[in-house]
Image 1 (tube, rainbow, N blue to C red):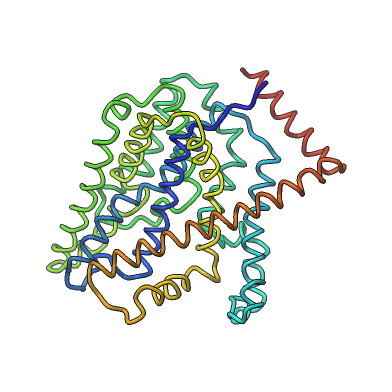
Image 2: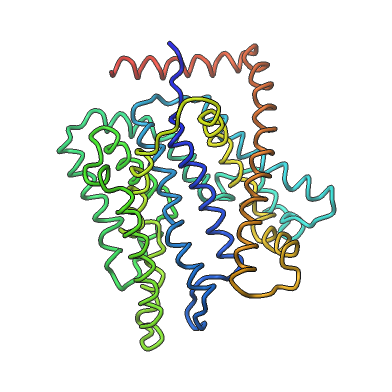
Length: 377
């Protein structure tokens, strides 16, 4: 049976989501966001508005995984490949930096720094990669549960989960010890299950009004954030809720992500070279994250890139725009090129491993998981 092609419109969305992630990190590292106790200016307002429209990126990534994952099958080889991809960056980057004379985490933290390179999942070297990898390991269990339950049972389950993880915290003026703001595996599971439900039963109003819901949700988050900044200047009790609109499990952030996801369902990309380019870039885009969020580069790249376009550190909207465009462009191109090289190396290695006992064992595991999926269907 021919391998089903990835949908080019959703690969374009995956690329956009990664650009949004880089933008979010740029805004944070460059201190161009509305902050408590800091006077407002045009750059901070624009920065926070951009943040509101980009914050959906993480949820969008999960929606893509769940929407298509529930209809597919789990592959142990894919899990191994994902882990090796993470290792490629976590181990190689400090070696390269040491070779060119740039200090790395292991220089200051010793053995603990080395542990973060060798055990990137266990140490949450990349918090997103850790939760995403664990989510993929759980996906066959989640998919089986989704396919075996009735639509009403799923609605009840999802209603309970999102009430607990999303709705209550979205309106609470108090911090809950239970709440991790969406930076954890439980929230990833919730969004994955929602995406699987949408893949099985459709998105209703989100399918019809996706773009509108995305825009309104993001603007709503920005307005709430701005309002809380004003109120917190008079009453400290509003300081916590100032941050809530920018939590991944905030209700408007989730709604905006679902809206954008279904908005892209209406984007039609004609089959041909352009579609293939989007598919290829979509596959390689995860490398952009693994590159610029490496623990040895996370707090360094903005300073390095900023010196190129704005060496005197001048303020203003024009310099802000130049720095943003430069950072996104450089990190995108560098991440894609490096991951392209990695993919070629991995492809050669995979051909060799297929001839070994270990490779044959992994192939059998893939086949067994596929047989189980076909039997369930």
